[in-house]
Length: 291
Image 1 (spheres, rainbow, N blue to C red):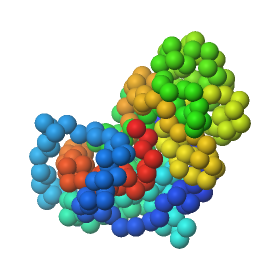
Image 2: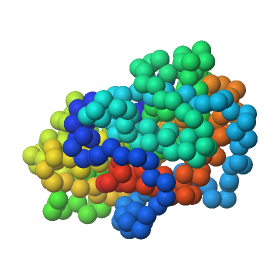
Image 3: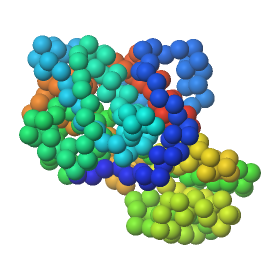
Image 4: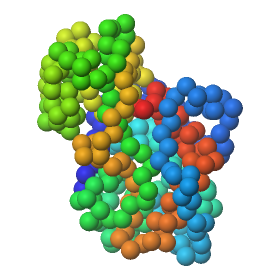
């Protein structure tokens, strides 16, 4: 099954940048001000409102499973407790549905088997929605998507990102990734420099060896918000979300045929967005928006 990947070393960046806390219940004035300056993505159509579920059709409790190696979505905090955007979303869903939930941490490769064998009801672990993963599980509506982004040094001369604007510019990207394939397809006139890892590409940007880096928006946002970037750089241009290259996003996985739970989760996710809870959680975990 496909999954978005983030370097494990980002755990240190997460611990340095975010503090654990309870699930917000409503959007505050401060959050509203922050949302005005940070782009919060909305994945729900206001014209399409899922029906309120009949919770009597659900089990007595929802057994969520996640992983602990995917910051800032799911990891263990300094006290060893599960934490992250996915963890908070799961808790908020249970509050919205007024149902008891449990959360178990397990390896990513064990998630589908846990659903199939009835050991878990829902997996919220950064699972990418792809044709292959749809063969194994069913998904809720998308609740997150990590776009591709460009980053440049502050004070640099790159003000916009178009094929013409960055023609002949040195652009760093990780070799063999969808981001490299996208660059070579749509920014072929750029001077594309391939690197073995995101860290190597970012290091080259800090040293001035490349003018831009193109990569995963979440990785780059965490780096920009952490200490390792030393405030050197910033996003430039907008997000790139072409599904052919970067996927459809993330959904909560349930066992095939479990429509009652899937529809209930869809209802809860839509309500979290409408009530501002999703925005609160997004701003907590992504203070530098990936969009």
